[in-house]
Length: 221
Image: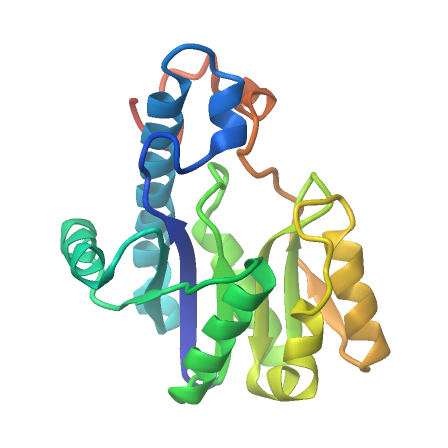
């Protein structure tokens, strides 16, 4: 096991109309409520997967929250059973992720993995593979089917070598995000290891594999 590890889960408060808007738009009447409930269940799925492997992998679990003030954030953390919470802060996704790198490495972490909450297929083996990759190299990415990535991890050396550059000027929300990150890494001599490809749950079509499933990973909605 390599040094102190940190897993940061980036999460948005699951309020109807303020989260998963692309998914809600395709769900018809009541779509905002259903999308928010799916968002909440997916977060619980992500946290359950993380908790199951945390004793083995030895990471600190941090929930980085968007959409709540300090008091409400603490109450939400108590409801979820998460002890360590922080704000994502303002700005685009790159700035918000960069803020998490700085916080975690500044607190003494040697390996930091960032992940979202839109992954019904997420398994403990994915997190284990990510941290193993950081034992061997500076950067790990989980490619997403839409051309982005569902996970990014850096070790301390990789962060100091190129962390900010990986976040700067990327075309967030497009199919070019993964390639843009890989290109920035190559330009700075940072070798990247890739995990298995997964699909985010962002649009109604992404629900297709689960529509006829009696027990989808996020549970009943």
